[in-house]
Image 1 (cartoon, rainbow, N blue to C red):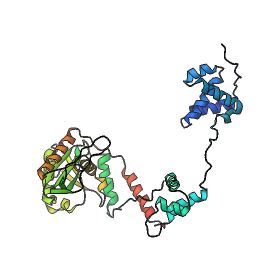
Image 2 (image 1 turned 90 degrees about the horizontal axis):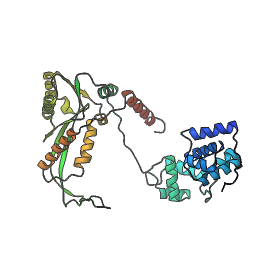
Image 3 (image 1 turned 90 degrees about the vertical axis):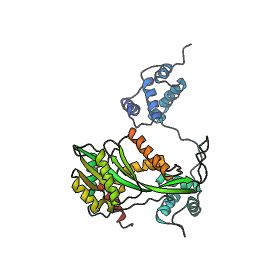
Image 4 (image 1 turned 45 degrees about the vertical axis):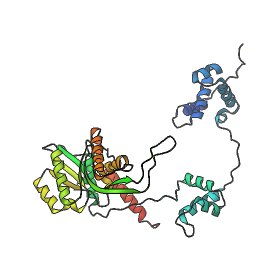
Length: 361
């Protein structure tokens, strides 16, 4: 049986351009783009069934949008107003929530809670939370910062970042630091393993079986780590670790060592060693700027994957675990890729200093 006779769908030139724009632009909502494609196909004279097969939609969908377009043209493709409860929160209340959050604190407290602010404004706590989310406000959060006071801040940033982004030819670059006082902690009760629906559980209290210091040198090109365990982290221990780097580095290569401003790195015994090993050159990070030393990122992996949930019944067990972790890392070593340029870092520091030195602070 033939279907019902379709009303002809003819587009003007302006309508065709608008529909093609909706159908082809990536930012157009996908629902509107599909409706535009349906109308454009219908304008070719194809039947609703043929359009449905070509676009992979139901025939009833094609029937609906053809009729909606014939009745309202382009406006007929827009979403109709949806039913729902009328808005109960006024713009003034939204403004009051935002202003009080940014400019006031409740008496005897440092920041608003959603219930305190809801009681003050006269709306529900859920509404306060929605307003905070809409404006990106999180009164319960705080972040710490420390601005370096190093007089050579800019020079040191350019020096260290330059080694990451454009390392010298015929040279090895190592990010070096110590992780002191790693504790061999044994939980006072056995760790309960993870089961479906319940995470691993461990007792809060523990017994400490001693500490050990870890010297680590991260090769920024290969990601491999040279590690040495020590009972102390004196200047002579750092010198001995430089000897270890020297032994494991390819002869003939210059060696650039990035380290922080710890006094043991600048002790006379270290200066004497550097004079005797001219291929080594130390590069110091700015004060209060451990974030710029890539080995700190490796220490974070060590803490997260080996130490944080580890249980060690003795200092020897801790040392064995650390050596095993370093060996496992080096078997599948991968470098950390530095992306920020020195100028980008300096510009961000300048913007931050401008903010904290403004009249609002």
